[in-house]
Length: 596
Image (cartoon, rainbow, N blue to C red):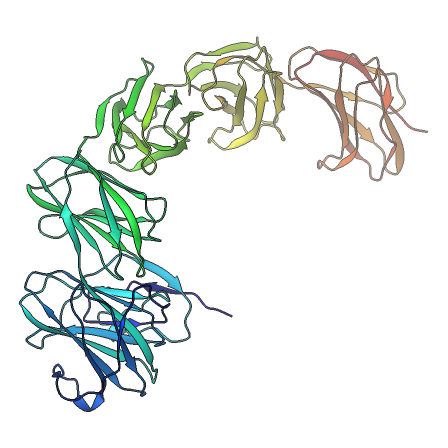
C-alpha cells in the first residue's frame, strides 16, 4: 500500500537538496559519462576518490545528463556564472531513487538556496531527512525538482555536487538557467510568459511608490501548478504567495509600503513547462460607508483583484442583516468584519444573490466593515442593503400579526411571553414571500423548532412544552433576497380530555396553525380505537402517544369520518391524542375513543 508523504519543491533555505524519482525530461540533453580525471577540482570536504562523474554545463545552454553507476559515488557538474545572476537549476529524467544536490561558489563556500512555498505530495519508501538535516535537505517530487540560488555573489566557476542517497545509482538530467526577466507596467499590456526550461522561474519588475495599490492576474495558464508572489524592493514577500493551477490566480489589491522597484515572481511547481499571461493593475480598492435601514449601496469592481470595503457604526447587542442583490459577479466572498478586523460572518454569493445574517448580535460597539472580495479574477457589481430586523411582540392566543419585508435580506424577530409547560403552535398565512425559514428560539437563543414556509403557508409546533417561564423569540428569515408579507398567528394548543366509551367530544380549531391535544386515562391491557367524525378539515393527522411520547398509532386522513387502527394499551397510564391539521387551516371535528 502506498503511503503519503509531504514533499517540497526542493528549495529549502538550505545548502543541499535531496533528489527523488523523476520522469524523463522533455528537453534534449547531452549525455556525459565521464570518469573523474582531475580536471575539475572538488569543493572542500568532497574527496576526489568518491567522484565517479564530472561534467560541464552552460547557463541557459542544453541540459546535461549525469550518470552514476557505482554505489556510494558522487557526481560533479560545473558552470560559469556572472555576479548578480539569478540561477535556477532543474533536475529531470532521474532514475536515481534518492539523492542530494548542493552548490558551491568559486571560493568553495556552500551557496544559499532560496526558500520556496511550493508543496506537493508523493509516496516514497525511504525516510525523510533527520532533524539535523532539516535546513540542508528537501525531497523532490516524482516529476522532478529544482533549486533556486540567491543572486550570484561573484563571477567564476560554480560546482553542483550530486550525491545519491543510500547505494542508489542511475541518471539525472540537469538544466541550469537564468530567470526569465522583463518589465511589467501597471494598467499596461499583459505579458505572455513561456516556461521552456526545467526549473526556470520568471521575474518581472515594476516601479512602485509608497501607498500605491496593485493587484495581479495570472491567466491562460498551461503550467500544472506553482506560486505567484510580489517581492518588495528589499526582496521580502509582500503579502502571501498565491498558488495557481490551470485556472490561473489573482493576488488581491496590495498597498505598497515603500517606493522602489518591485518584482513579480512566478515559480512553477515540480519542473513544469508551459505558458501563462501576467497582468498588473493599480486600481485601488473601493471604500465607503453604508447606513442601516437606508438606501442600498452598489459595489462595482472592474479589475481582477480589486475589492470593496464599506463601514457602518454598530452597537453592542444590535442585530443586523445584509441583502445582496443585482449581482453580476460570478462568485464573491462577502464578509462582515468586527471592529478588531476579525470575521463575524461570511458567505459566498453568485449571480442569484443572497444574504448575510449574523447568528449573534453585534458583540461590541464600534465601526464594522462589509468586505466584498470576488473569487479568482471575477469582476462585476452587486447592491448591498444593510438593515436591522423588524422587531415586535406577539401574544399567545392573541391577534395574528402581519409582517411585511420590503428590503432584501431583512429578517424579523418577534418575542412573546410563555409559561413553563405550555404547548406552542405558530401558524403562517397570507404569505407572499417565496420562501422563508422560521425558527422558534428558547430564552438562551437555542433552537426549539424550525421549518421552511412557502407561499402556501404552514405551521410550526414545538416538539415539547416550553421548558421555563420567560420570553421566547420567533425569527422569520426570508430565503435569499425574497421580500413580501407573512402573517404569524401564535397559539397555545386546544386542550381537553376524553374518556373511553363516552359520547364524542367536539373539537374546534379556530386559529391558523393551531393543533389540539387531548388526554386519555387508559387502563392496562385494553384495546382501544380512536375515531373521528364530522371532520371539516381537508387533511389532518391524528396520533396516540404514551405519556413518555412513544407513538402507539397514527393516521393522516381527509374523510369526514375515519378510525385509527385499534391498539392495545398495555399499562395503565395517561395517554395523549394529538390532532394536527395540514396547512394553516381552521375547522372542527368530533373525537371519540371506544373499546370492545
